[in-house]
Image (cartoon, rainbow, N blue to C red; front, side, top):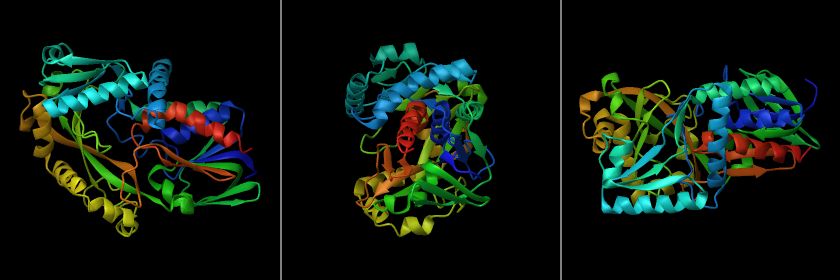
Length: 396
């Protein structure tokens, strides 16, 4: 293959968005993906939520990209006919301490420019009639969408703009030499002036020494869903007030564009980077995880141990997810829940054992590496991909 301007590794939402924006600027660009199509992992295995921007800390990259990404993503879905379901997100407080969390989220949302309202107990019923709480935050701009259809549509737009997409091409290494980057794959060698590593669950491995102070630790998120007879009890998205010490949002009920109501997820350590079943080791990496000093420092924290015990229960026992969901919608019963699907979260952890909560991008003279695009990475994907494209173009 002749040398091109840019190579993008990974056909998830961030990688495809980057390629799309590169192609729009006239750059010759190729996307290399090890799977048979786009959005096969994190971008296609999620609850399908368009986040509103009330949760990220003001001033963070996530806050900036989430609020703008929400607007762009909803417009894109409407323009391209990607299924989308408006309706907002309701974050419910069931105690005075949780009401303090609602006030903090409201403060963040106002600072981020998000359209939000703080609701009293009686007002909750106007939004979600079957939900119980002493107060809530309503994020008007939250929505559901078909995330896989979105990435497929964006891949089509990228291709129409001139990008080439190569599937079934697992990347083995990214090497820089002089004014070129060589990407070795299972199907041969690609050369470009710049490479963008958007490999998600494998981004740290491809970044090599650029990520020697951080490591992706995969967390498997298992979802339940409501039986069809009970889906009318949920209008849109119902969340419990989260623990702000951790980036996980807890059990929530989300009505998807197909009418199903997804419940969960639990979040437990996965035994492999593509381990969607409990006993699976697919994708490997367990040995590296267990040998990472940051993993042990994370596990030694008492607050994380408490969280881990709770999350493991929700991942293994359907009744544990049901118990939390019933606190939000008391009319539900344990028999109304069935097991659904699982996803994997590429959670970056540093050497001190901290769960990295913001976007992390590192660069060399000829490459851009997206080490952390954790949730709400999908919502952020359009403005974030444009920024990554600009960083890559500056190296040409």
